Image 1: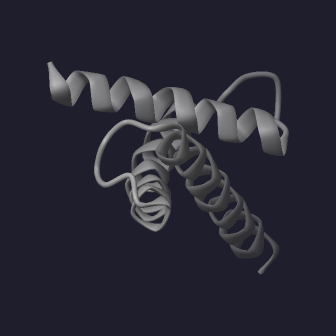
Image 2 (image 1 turned 180 degrees about the vertical axis):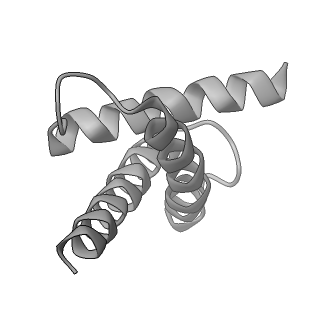
Image 3 (image 1 turned 30 degrees about the vertical axis):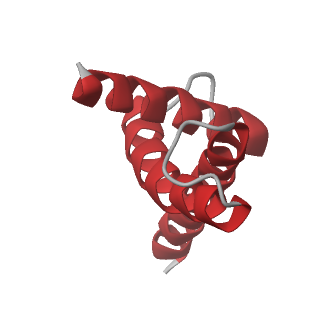
Length: 87
C-alpha cells in the first residue's frame, strides 16, 4: 500500500508541477507527471524536510519541497526536450 500511495502522491505532485508551469497542449503528460513527481518528491521533499528539522515525516515543509522539486524536474525535462528538438 505504501508503494501505491507514493506513486499516487508523485503523480499528483507531478501534475501540479505541470499546472504551475503551464501545460504543453490540452492535457497532462502522465508519464512525465509520475517521473517528475517521484524524483521531485524524493529530492525536494527530503531536502526541505531535513532543512526544516522535521525529519522524514509527512509535514507541510516536505509537501512544499516535493512540489518545488517536481517543478524543477519538469522544467529541466522540458528544457532538455526542446533543446534536442532544435538541434
